[in-house]
Length: 234
Ligand SMILES: Nc1ncnc2c1ncn2[C@@H]1O[C@H](COP(=O)(O)OP(=O)(O)O)[C@@H](O)[C@H]1O
Ligand SMILES: [Mg+2]
Image (cartoon, rainbow, N blue to C red; front, side, top):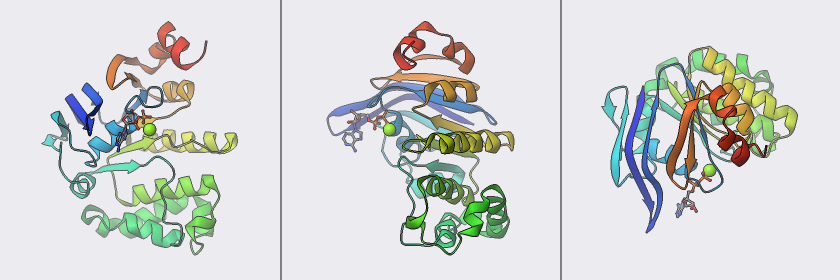
């Protein structure tokens, strides 16, 4: 579904990604593991069309998308749940969800997608008229995920979806990723909770200083001594 090759990305003079290559097949959860500053967000934002790569290819469903503007990338079916629960705080839950359905690909299916989001997150249905800024952190993350789903994505990239949430809510958010995947959504997952993300993912890549240094099945990496020492503190 997604194929990234030879990807170089710079922020000014500083290189954030160096020759990154990865593949995501339809139906997979693929995890990216790496320390702070490794380039995980830069990778997601580059795929999403928010940074221009200086080299390399990004091919989604057979279409080269590298360097295309983000609205085009979204409309091809790549959704993003950005770092830090990005909701519009003064808009209501309903208005936030409606923003997600503005994409041309999603307009016709708005009512069906809204039903689906409310079925998945009953709390959002209960609070549909409430300003998003008054929701709890966990509810805001559910709203951010719901808004993304309103755009009818085929691939969703989750950037640290459980960061800063209470432990019980962390489980709920990660369970949501698993449920969406079981229903057919392809997922790219960046998650500081490395053990959980490797358990959830069929395959994973380790990103260090902008380079992929290790890749394999989630359970293989979970058992790998280098991963255990560097990311699991074992
Ligand atoms: N907009 C930006 N401008 C300049 N440097 C950036 C920008 N975004 C990220 N960086 C730098 O790029 C590197 C990778 O950052 P990032 O992709 O956010 O990593 P991660 O998400 O893995 O923590 C870091 O050194 C960071 O300081
Ligand atoms: Mg990041």
